[in-house]
Image (tube, rainbow, N blue to C red; front, side, top):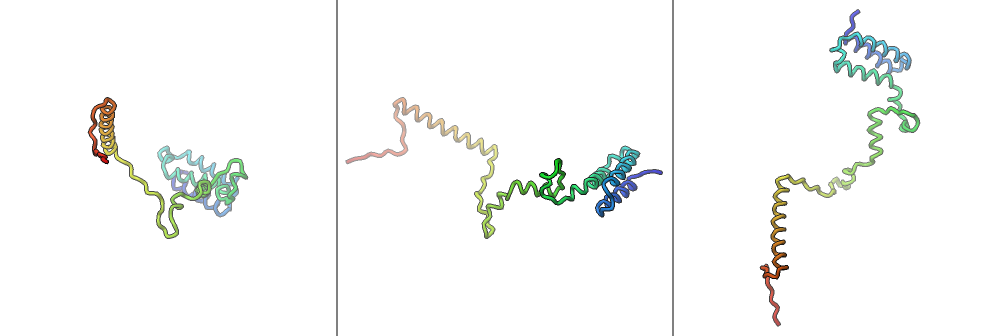
Length: 164
Protein backbone atom coordinates (compact mmCIF):
# COMPACT_ATOMS: atom_id res chain seq x y z
CA UNK A 1 0.00 0.00 0.00
CA UNK A 2 1.39 3.37 -0.98
CA UNK A 3 0.96 6.21 1.42
CA UNK A 4 0.53 9.82 0.28
CA UNK A 5 -0.36 13.17 1.77
CA UNK A 6 -4.02 13.02 0.70
CA UNK A 7 -4.57 9.77 2.62
CA UNK A 8 -2.67 11.20 5.61
CA UNK A 9 -4.87 14.32 5.52
CA UNK A 10 -8.10 12.27 5.36
CA UNK A 11 -7.09 10.07 8.30
CA UNK A 12 -6.06 13.09 10.37
CA UNK A 13 -9.30 14.92 9.56
CA UNK A 14 -11.25 11.84 10.65
CA UNK A 15 -9.45 11.80 14.01
CA UNK A 16 -10.05 15.53 14.54
CA UNK A 17 -13.74 15.26 13.61
CA UNK A 18 -14.33 12.28 15.89
CA UNK A 19 -12.55 14.10 18.71
CA UNK A 20 -14.78 17.16 18.35
CA UNK A 21 -17.87 14.93 18.32
CA UNK A 22 -16.51 13.26 21.50
CA UNK A 23 -16.55 9.77 19.94
CA UNK A 24 -12.90 9.07 20.70
CA UNK A 25 -11.37 8.83 24.15
CA UNK A 26 -7.86 9.98 24.91
CA UNK A 27 -6.27 6.52 24.67
CA UNK A 28 -7.87 5.78 21.30
CA UNK A 29 -6.80 9.17 19.98
CA UNK A 30 -3.27 8.61 21.19
CA UNK A 31 -3.05 5.22 19.44
CA UNK A 32 -4.40 6.59 16.16
CA UNK A 33 -2.05 9.58 16.21
CA UNK A 34 0.91 7.25 16.86
CA UNK A 35 -0.13 5.13 13.86
CA UNK A 36 -0.35 8.25 11.72
CA UNK A 37 3.11 9.35 12.85
CA UNK A 38 4.52 5.96 11.85
CA UNK A 39 2.84 6.34 8.44
CA UNK A 40 4.27 9.82 8.16
CA UNK A 41 7.73 8.40 8.66
CA UNK A 42 7.25 6.42 5.45
CA UNK A 43 6.61 9.60 3.43
CA UNK A 44 9.27 11.13 1.24
CA UNK A 45 11.36 13.76 3.05
CA UNK A 46 10.16 16.57 0.75
CA UNK A 47 6.52 15.70 1.43
CA UNK A 48 7.20 15.39 5.15
CA UNK A 49 8.56 18.93 5.38
CA UNK A 50 5.68 20.58 3.52
CA UNK A 51 3.57 23.23 5.22
CA UNK A 52 0.45 21.12 4.66
CA UNK A 53 1.86 18.33 6.84
CA UNK A 54 2.83 20.85 9.51
CA UNK A 55 -0.71 22.23 9.74
CA UNK A 56 -2.12 18.70 9.88
CA UNK A 57 0.25 17.82 12.73
CA UNK A 58 -0.76 20.98 14.57
CA UNK A 59 -4.45 20.04 14.32
CA UNK A 60 -3.61 16.51 15.54
CA UNK A 61 -1.77 17.90 18.56
CA UNK A 62 -4.76 20.14 19.29
CA UNK A 63 -7.01 17.09 19.12
CA UNK A 64 -4.82 15.33 21.70
CA UNK A 65 -5.22 18.30 24.03
CA UNK A 66 -8.90 18.77 23.17
CA UNK A 67 -10.29 18.55 26.69
CA UNK A 68 -7.63 20.87 28.10
CA UNK A 69 -8.03 23.48 25.37
CA UNK A 70 -11.83 23.44 25.48
CA UNK A 71 -11.98 23.72 29.29
CA UNK A 72 -13.79 27.04 29.88
CA UNK A 73 -12.68 27.36 33.52
CA UNK A 74 -11.14 30.80 34.09
CA UNK A 75 -9.20 29.48 37.09
CA UNK A 76 -7.29 26.89 35.09
CA UNK A 77 -3.96 28.38 36.14
CA UNK A 78 -4.76 27.98 39.83
CA UNK A 79 -6.33 24.52 39.61
CA UNK A 80 -3.78 22.68 37.45
CA UNK A 81 -0.05 22.39 37.75
CA UNK A 82 0.77 22.93 34.06
CA UNK A 83 -2.18 24.74 32.49
CA UNK A 84 -2.56 24.89 28.74
CA UNK A 85 -4.60 27.83 27.54
CA UNK A 86 -6.30 28.27 24.19
CA UNK A 87 -5.47 31.37 22.16
CA UNK A 88 -8.69 33.04 23.27
CA UNK A 89 -7.97 32.31 26.93
CA UNK A 90 -4.47 33.78 26.60
CA UNK A 91 -5.90 36.97 25.03
CA UNK A 92 -8.50 37.30 27.79
CA UNK A 93 -5.92 36.63 30.49
CA UNK A 94 -3.56 39.31 29.21
CA UNK A 95 -6.44 41.78 28.80
CA UNK A 96 -7.58 41.05 32.35
CA UNK A 97 -4.05 41.62 33.67
CA UNK A 98 -3.52 44.89 31.81
CA UNK A 99 -6.96 46.30 32.47
CA UNK A 100 -8.46 48.99 30.28
CA UNK A 101 -6.35 50.34 27.53
CA UNK A 102 -5.18 53.90 28.21
CA UNK A 103 -6.44 55.03 24.83
CA UNK A 104 -10.00 54.18 25.90
CA UNK A 105 -9.67 56.35 28.99
CA UNK A 106 -8.87 59.52 27.01
CA UNK A 107 -12.22 59.67 25.17
CA UNK A 108 -15.09 61.57 26.77
CA UNK A 109 -18.83 60.79 26.60
CA UNK A 110 -19.21 62.65 23.30
CA UNK A 111 -16.45 60.60 21.68
CA UNK A 112 -13.85 63.38 21.53
CA UNK A 113 -10.27 62.42 22.29
CA UNK A 114 -9.08 64.49 25.26
CA UNK A 115 -5.55 63.09 25.42
CA UNK A 116 -2.61 65.44 25.45
CA UNK A 117 -1.34 65.94 21.90
CA UNK A 118 1.83 64.11 21.04
CA UNK A 119 4.65 66.07 19.44
CA UNK A 120 6.15 64.62 16.35
CA UNK A 121 9.73 63.44 16.54
CA UNK A 122 12.27 65.78 15.01
CA UNK A 123 14.47 64.59 12.20
CA UNK A 124 18.24 64.44 12.60
CA UNK A 125 18.54 67.38 10.20
CA UNK A 126 16.26 69.52 12.39
CA UNK A 127 18.14 68.49 15.52
CA UNK A 128 21.46 69.50 13.92
CA UNK A 129 20.11 72.93 12.92
CA UNK A 130 18.72 73.59 16.40
CA UNK A 131 21.96 72.48 18.00
CA UNK A 132 24.06 74.71 15.73
CA UNK A 133 21.87 77.71 16.66
CA UNK A 134 22.19 76.89 20.35
CA UNK A 135 25.96 76.65 20.15
CA UNK A 136 26.16 80.01 18.31
CA UNK A 137 23.96 81.74 20.93
CA UNK A 138 26.03 80.29 23.76
CA UNK A 139 29.26 81.58 22.15
CA UNK A 140 27.75 85.09 21.87
CA UNK A 141 26.61 85.01 25.48
CA UNK A 142 30.01 83.79 26.65
CA UNK A 143 31.77 86.57 24.75
CA UNK A 144 29.46 89.23 26.30
CA UNK A 145 29.95 87.76 29.78
CA UNK A 146 33.75 87.65 29.41
CA UNK A 147 33.72 91.29 28.22
CA UNK A 148 31.55 92.31 31.15
CA UNK A 149 33.80 90.52 33.65
CA UNK A 150 36.91 92.10 32.07
CA UNK A 151 35.36 95.56 32.56
CA UNK A 152 34.89 96.39 28.89
CA UNK A 153 31.87 98.28 27.70
CA UNK A 154 29.18 95.84 26.71
CA UNK A 155 26.75 96.92 23.99
CA UNK A 156 23.25 97.15 25.39
CA UNK A 157 20.06 96.55 23.54
CA UNK A 158 18.21 99.30 25.39
CA UNK A 159 19.74 102.03 27.45
CA UNK A 160 17.46 103.75 29.92
CA UNK A 161 18.39 107.00 31.60
CA UNK A 162 16.54 107.98 34.72
CA UNK A 163 16.41 111.69 35.39
CA UNK A 164 14.84 113.61 38.25
